[in-house]
Length: 430
Image (cartoon, rainbow, N blue to C red; front, side, top):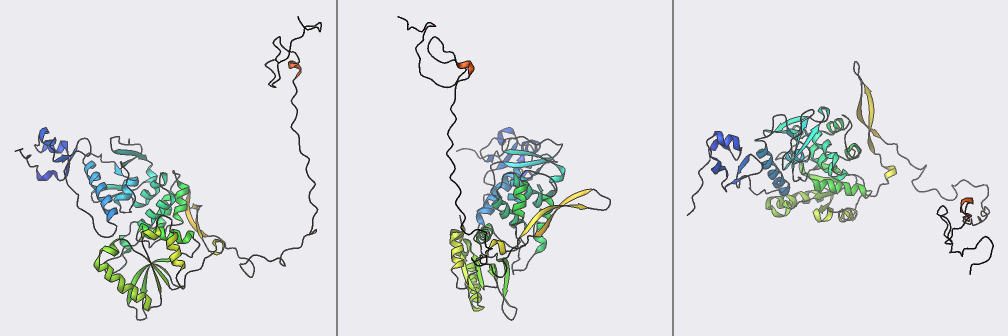
């Protein structure tokens, strides 16, 4: 019967460095036992630590965050004091639902040297492009600077998803808003984008104009983007629906008040949780009693294109009508110089409304009577242009002679047939 390994000291914790274990009296043979994992060189972790299954809403995102968190805590045992987690790793640890990469991104501020190790991607950052905070004992880049770092490799849609997750306002158990618990604001994202030049600035500016406060999940962000791309008016997000007496009937994911239409984006927990299922029935019944049309959507309707979700919204009896992009007021972010007293010239992002363009009297195109008369209503057709022939290439003066083999010289690129050589007398040879 194999012998069980000796128990480790409780002071080491779930993850520890080999140097700390040796100082605690653990032998090298014990560090090579099968009950310890080796996530990084010089680090040991107890096998099976942190493998609890995540349940509830966004269970997959929570499970992915827990895996990255376990690796980050393991590497923190040997990480230098001036290093911090940044980029995609920090986005996952902040709980934005970003997809994790295979390596942990560890950053340092210049002129410090970026770490180099298997499983670690080191990055050297400018002091003006990063702000370091602490989360659960780990040093991370701030939410706003983390979002700006993702402009290097993330697309515009993913940047909008992560931006919505950063600026959303969480709600408590009774549905009360908690503005102090959100990670950052839209203005903080704009300040980071305007802090200086960086890779992906164009994508960041475009994504910043699409970030909205109120999307409680990446699925709701995808639905909103699909609705706007289809030409429908943009809905209000995370709105409280109350009756005439002020009693809260529910919190709608997306609502068009002028059309009395509500769209509910339901994840899988709405199907698996009995309490959530009962709450949804009560909420939707109250919405119908107040005169709203309820459209229930799942991930199968929204992803990958969202065409099915848009069709369901348009199929409602009082569905929102298509709005032309030319008639919809839009906001754009632009860099504008600011002159502070006693300081130099800085740049900041300003939000400006684009001017709308409407045709006079009606949005329909001009009719034939409204067009200005032309001088000649039946102009003569233009004369047919003569077909241009290709120029004939003739051999130059240097190509007049013919070699003894009957071919032209190499200076002329025009290909000719083989000619018989004739002597100067003009008689053919015998």
